[in-house]
Each structure stands twice: as C-alpha cells, then as structure tokens.
Image (cartoon, rainbow, N blue to C red; front, side):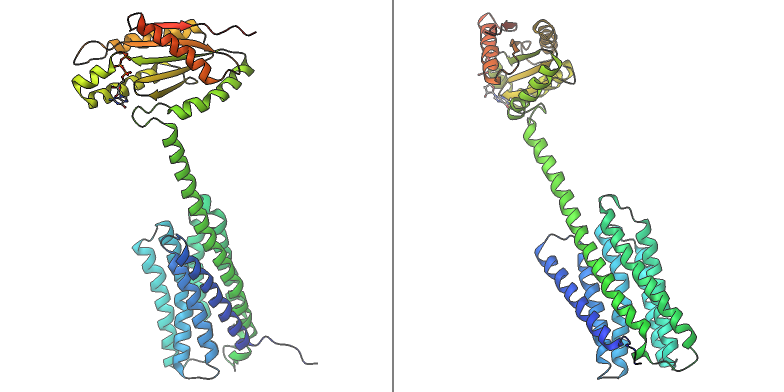
Length: 396
Ligand SMILES: Nc1nc2c(ncn2[C@@H]2O[C@H](COP(=O)(O)OP(=O)(O)OP(=O)(O)O)[C@@H](O)[C@H]2O)c(=O)[nH]1
C-alpha cells in the first residue's frame, strides 16, 4: 500500500511563503507604530528565513552551488537576529554577547562552505548544518531563560517557546540523520527536514506574536507612566507643590464620605498673606514666589498626613483638617501663623489672616468656602494677622 511522505520542496515553499507573510505583517507594523529600537532585526529575521527557504526551493530548477550558499547563509544568519533584536529592544546589547552570537553563526557558515568545497557527503553537510543551528539555538535559549522579564513575561516566554520548538525539531532531525551518515542520503525525501520546515512556521508564528506583544507591552507601560505624570502635574500646584485648586475641590466629596462613615469632623481653613502685593512690589516677584513656596512647605509640615493642603490661587491657601474640630484646627493654624511670622524677610514680619469653619456632612464645598472666606474677610477687617472662625448653620 503506498504511503504518503512529506515532500521537502513543498514544505520549503509553504514555509517560505508563511515567513514572507510574517515579515510583511511585521514590516507594516514597523512602519506605522512606534516600535522602538530592535524591531527591525525581527522583521529582517523573518525575511531572511523566507529568502533562505525560497532560495532552497529554487534549487530544484537551479542546482548550481550558489543557491545552496545563499540559502544556507540566510538561514544560519537569521538565528542571531532574534537575540540581537531583543538585546537592542531591552538595551542589553553588549559587545561580548554580539561577538558570541554572530561569531558562532560565522563559524557554522564557514564550516559549511568548507564542507562543500572539500566534498563532504550530503548527509554529513546536513548534520553539520543541523548541529550548528542547534548550538545557536542553545545559546539563544540560555539568554532567553535568564532575561529579566518584568512586565514582558508572556512575550519573552513565547520567544523561548519558539526556540524550544526548533531545538526539538533539530534534535529529531539529527537523530534521523545519524544512522544515514555513511550511506546514500536523499535530501528531497528527508522527512525530518520536512518536519523541521513545518516547525519553523510555528516557531515563526510564536516569534511574531512575541515581538508584537513586546511592543504593545512597552507602549502600554509608557502610556501609563505618561498618564500618571500628567495626573500628578494636574493635581499639583506648579509653584508650591501643594494640591491645585481643582484637585483640592474634587477631593472634598471623598473626604466627606470617609468622615461621615467614621463619624468625625472636617474643618476648612482659608488663609492668605497680609499685604502680599507690597512684598511683590518692593522685593520683586521672585521674592514673592519664594515666600509662597516656603509657606507651602511650612503648611504641609504643620498638618497631619490625612489632611489636605492646597493653593486656591494667588496668595490664598486652604487646608482641610480631617478628624479635627474647629478649636484644634485653630490651634494648628495659629502655630503656622507664628512660624510664618518668624520667617526671615527683607522687610516687615509676614502676617497671615485666616478664616475657619466646619465642613458639614454632605455640604457643598462652595458654601463652606463662602463661610470661611467671610471669616477671613473679618480677620482682615479686624487688623490682619489673626484667625476668625465662622459657625456652620445648624441643620434644620
Ligand atoms: N509672586 C507671586 N505673586 C502672585 C502670584 N499669584 C498672585 N500673585 C500676586 O499676589 C497679590 C495678591 O494680592 P491680594 O491678595 O489682592 O492683596 P494683598 O496685597 O495680599 O493684601 P491683603 O490680602 O488685603 O492683605 C497680587 O499682587 C498678585 O499679583 C504668584 O504665583 N506669585
């Protein structure tokens, strides 16, 4: 009964087309996305394998030695391209590693040329070729096994799987070749080679997925970092480092909800620097900025971790004292006022005027702000450099 065998030329043609398609997909991705350094090596790797396999197919029509020379060069030198790409992508391209992987590829290739020129048998040349690729795969495995994965765990593991697949197929081919070394060998009906060609498609597919995932993971990580930086910038007052007005106001509902659950009070303090315009006018805007920064630092140092300090604009600061009633908040604000008075300044001592009020559960920030502002206004009216408190309206 006739039995079906895998035809080497057909599998080579099929694998060559598949690798060319993978190179095409990677090339499109390379041109249209921010793939980062290293990606080009992966595009070139798939293209080289495709070129090698299709040139090997061409041997059926053109059996001259150049086809063999070109096909083998493409296949042998495609192996170090995977590791080179990954090393450049991860910024680990040391001179020693590059010399090792490219040097080994050169030795395998030169050995093959030597075998051709000195008339080694086809089976011996095939053995040298498979052994050389196996050695290269072993070095790649060693690197991929030890590479720092972090967020890249899945793609690096996938790359590792692709090399493992090839290693197994190469070992199988060598095991099949070994008994034939002394006798006649028909490479066109070398089933192990046909299986190796098919395996190279699966390995190429794993590699392609891995490279695309690597880029995707890196882009996602960069986006997350940028988003966090932008959020941080939007939430922070550029000059003093305390909360921006937006962030301060938008934090109120969450603090209120926490306080309501814990059954504890929140006190709002609003304060501004007395005659700040005069400081700006007589000592310069830069001196004014420095004073604002200093007061921001002093305020943050004066309050507890759960409290929120913000600059609402100009020389106006605010503090939300969590789990703190009016009299305790007033004591802290008074200490701060004293500290600011002690600041070394070129002119008169700096005074702070402030207004305090309790933030009622569920109350809108703007209504508490209005009360604190009225208290601040009355502190200014009463001669500045002092604090006034405004009682909250009693719930109906
Ligand atoms: N250096 C500096 N000055 C600012 C900044 N933002 C606002 N100012 C100035 O701060 C001053 C605020 O003055 P006001 O609060 O209106 O008045 P004041 O001089 O402090 O007087 P009283 O509040 O009534 O004691 C203005 O001159 C603004 O130009 C800033 O970021 N840096």
